[in-house]
Image 1: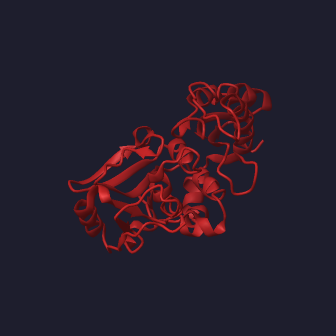
Image 2: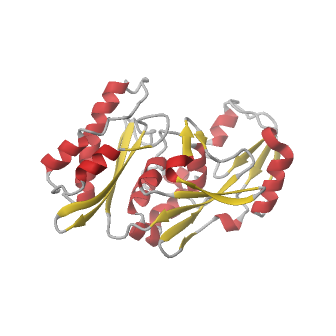
Image 3: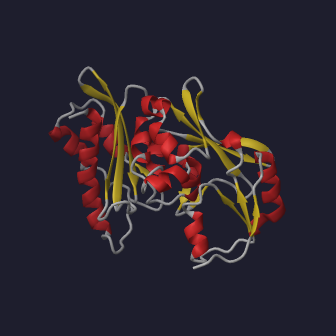
Length: 284
């Protein structure tokens, strides 16, 4: 299908983008890489009067070291996140997840900020960002503010970004030396994951000192498997110990039931995938 007609604006600064958003209000939509919005427009599930393209705002791109954190501009592509040496050193889980997003064409166009703001619970980057305890910087009429990971994802396709705000950057605490793995289960290549698990762990003296586990498509938002994380701390990285911890992964989840599988199937699948992800993260 062809999208409904709309006006197109391409500001060159965040300030210009915010002014355009304020002027057009509910009749406007922000577009980043367009990999989520364009299909919606083509199916006419949304018909904004104005589309505000962030693609010409250079300040929203790039990855930099900021002391104890990495700062990733919202318009940085999945391909750049996957290959950047700073991300691979300090936030390996995010790089591992970015490598699994759709196909090469989408990874070269889609953006980290766009995917996170879209907040699809089946999207691959929300759970890793949550597990890595990311924070999200948004700009609005009153200036910038920072939203913690636990408060960012509100509900299905809903975040804490205000209607008059724009996500500008993602800050991720450094996790240098942590092992990581993102395991996803799909029926066909490049499909949204039926279930996926991101695990990152820090070893100390042959035992697991810290663990973070994020869940994809196990609820209306990305989730942390905190019971699994607690069970892993102090454990030896054996199949038995990791399997016992993984058995807790479905606690507190509310996975959907659809044509790909019902909720009970996803809970079972999450247990299997969590065991695989943690074993891979510890190098077992």
